[in-house]
Image (cartoon, rainbow, N blue to C red; front, side, top):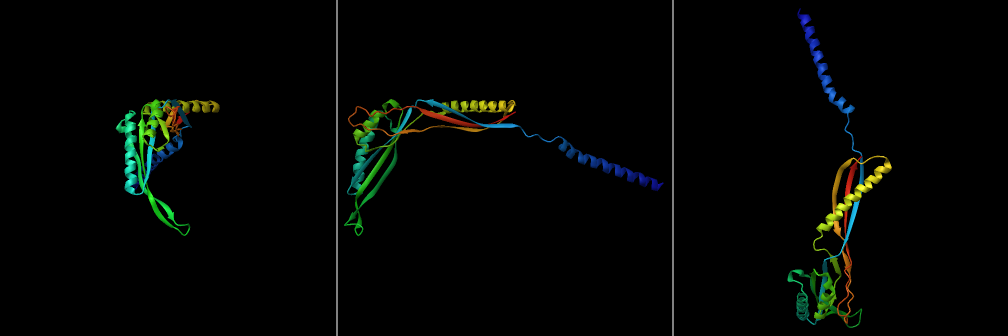
Amino acid sequence: MYGRLRNVLLAGAMIASLVLAAFALRPEKALAEDPVKEPRLISVTGEGAVVVKPDLVTISFGVETEGSTAKEAQASNTSVMNKVVAALKGAGISAEDIQTSNFSLYPVYGWEGDRPGGKQVVTGYRCNNTVTVRLKSVSATGSVIDAAINAGATNVGGINFGLQDPEPVKNEALALAVANARTKAEVMAKAAGVTISGIYKISDGYASVDRMEVSPYLLKDAAATPIESGTVTVRASVRIDFTF
């Protein structure tokens, strides 16, 4: 009797072990039969550009002076630069739009006696002071340059045309870039015999304003220095993965 009971218990234990093993194997079998499918993608880069008239000009005006001493060169420079700044303000530019962008004072060297045996000595000092101006009236660019030159400015830096508020134009360029990306993807899908079904991923796009820099052609005898503002281009790019 006891032997028969032992056999029944052993048989039950074996059946239970087989059932547990079967359940343990089921997830692996299901995973093998139903794998996760990779998405089918068409990846493209879209580009957009918007051309607009500039409404902002940035110009640099410099004054360079020399003197036998550092103090003399600096004092002379200060006197002239004050006149230049006053002329800029008189042309309608606010103090907030005039900023010092460079100041330097350094010795000027020469040679005492014949070279190469001569001795290098300080012959004087040179002072440079530069202000950068934001001009919000593009049409006044030429007359502002003339005012600064007439007040004593000795250097005029490159003129940069741009936008006071570029964000709306950047958004427009980004929208064009997205549309361009979809057009590219649809052309590629049609050529491959498939159909675009949606968007899997959009990478962060970017937009920038192309800097347009010109060098002014100064005409001392002219009523106003001729400056043409032209246009500026805002460009955008975006990366999109389309599903098919």
